Image 1: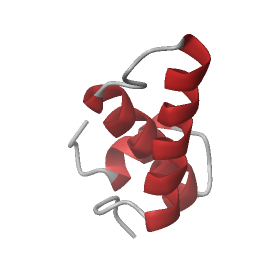
Image 2: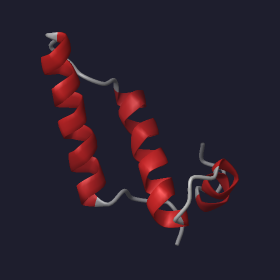
Image 3: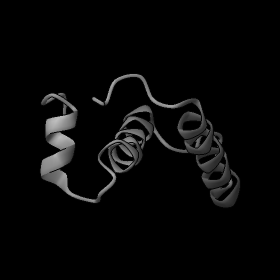
Image 4: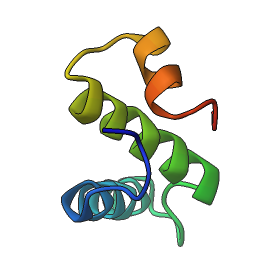
Length: 65
């Protein structure tokens, strides 16, 4: 399986994490769009490759990142 569209539960998790950061830091916004995309990619990489290995993430992501 290649990393493409993120799983819905990963997207929801990252959104909740962003909201938590905004609440904790008392800011209007939590994570930036780039931070959310990067975190989503890393979490998806763990699920898709079943490991924490950057080389495998790159192969699964087809060089997107």
